[in-house]
Image (cartoon, rainbow, N blue to C red; front, top):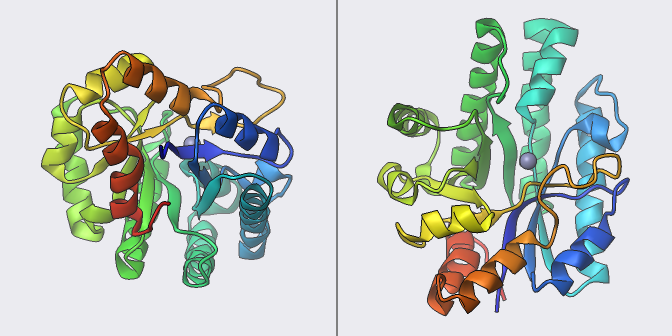
Length: 279
Ligand SMILES: [Zn+2]
């Protein structure tokens, strides 16, 4: 049975491959490793080459997981909105924009060389910032959407929390203007499967039992994730690496998820949005 965690932040300075092994022992088979912030990998960004160094750390960790476990791991890299806020404060608008566009060229190269299967996280900060900074983050997000459209590759968006319908329609509009909805994933998504189907964007749902139970009432068009943060100084800060397989198997046992649902969520939906084949 294929069980995929769509959003894990593994870190060589954290548990690294050991966290992947925990995921595997709990029944996980496939995972998408998502780049966090350069400073988490001990890199202080001065130019785009620093981003590349940070990306290479995650890409190498992904290779290591593939080599040392039975898992199939894939990698995506982006520029996290929280990281953009910091760069903006440090360098100002013009320099940060130049840095972002040059970094997008690096992401393009990494995608073309098949070191990554998509872009992310990119988007808007989930914490309050000035309207000037928010506008800038939006500009970078639009550029990220354009990049994913040009490369026809998946993109995971990090956005503020979604409550009202208006937010969904606003996102639909932005994606329509800049991206390709078939490739867009809303990371940390609420379980509003129907609304996401309506706007054509794939939700990646935080895999508490409660959330997945809510989601499946509206269908199986979603992905599952933990947003696992591999940080030894913050144990238990977020969901553990075993959560996606554990939740999936528990809900299978209690017949809330069928085998067909699991096939759809963990295999077909992933294959479709990333254009990959899972075995
Ligand atoms: Zn994340």
